[in-house]
Length: 403
Ligand code: 7TS
Image: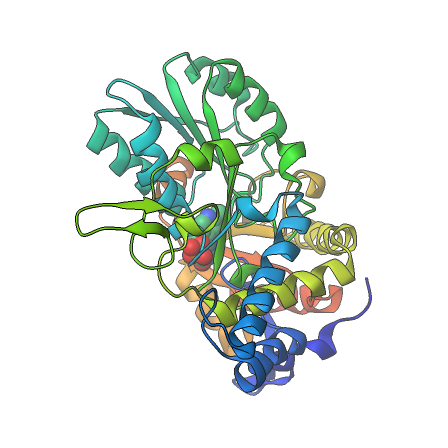
């Protein structure tokens, strides 16, 4: 992959007198000039509301907004009308839990999640189960931190209505076998919801290859702005689902006591959408496609390999998740023996190194691992092997100081 660092202005700044080493892209990614400029250009040159004005500016804004949808659809191998703009992964999954829950989940049905879910792909299903009298259960993991597929098969049954699973764990980094999960779930008539917040930014994701029914992801983790995300769903399923939010834009005809719904995707886009954010996300997709998602993946696999190897040889470190970089995304969670992760992150920050420490919105997983928190380093297109070396050397200094 070409060296992209010059595209990311924030990487030029210093933190506490040191060059910034940003290793928290799983939380949110930094933005290239191409994205920042696309958003600024929209506001400078084309700002108007979409889908309503009969004047040139609104027509242009609408075109930019819809072109972003087409780019995103092309990235994941989908049709544009199946791509719904939301506020992010969290909203996409809540939309599903309400709307799909309403259409499909009955008392006594089962919803199957996994113990490695981010709270965003857990709590909406907990609440749905509570509202409908459904039963929620969770698939476990193997000692290596992979999904326990035997446990999945044991827990999947003809009563399972929905299987909701993350594509890539934001803690273990594990890449889950979605095509296999989809095949088996469909065999018993269950629908498959994939949390792709940590996969679409980093891997080539094609919804037809995954075989799933729904896919949720966020713009801000893939070099785009905050405040925008995607829900992709199979057309026939989206057609049968009731709207989530109601109001302007999502209707066809309205009377005082009732209304009918607009076509897809607008049925699910009530109110003024995040227009500039969509344009920014379109620019981010263009940027990633320009780099080549295969190249992005190769780059991250190399960096993840260096991280894993560097952590493995330090006997004061415990690493969670699969050892093989091919089985995981660019996320590595770890702990320094006997040291609180917050202390590690604070000392690293003094050297300009940003990592995350905490439960990473995955408390059940941390409980299962027997820990309350962990440190997490995550990489993206702008990180370099030198940064990994500097991070590992800084970790040795943390251990010398606190160990
Ligand atoms: N699902 C996964 C797997 C995630 O990693 C995240 C965010 C979400 C859902 C929620 O995405 P949002 O854009 O709606 O917030 N993960 C993290 C993280 O790991 N650290 O900060 C946010």
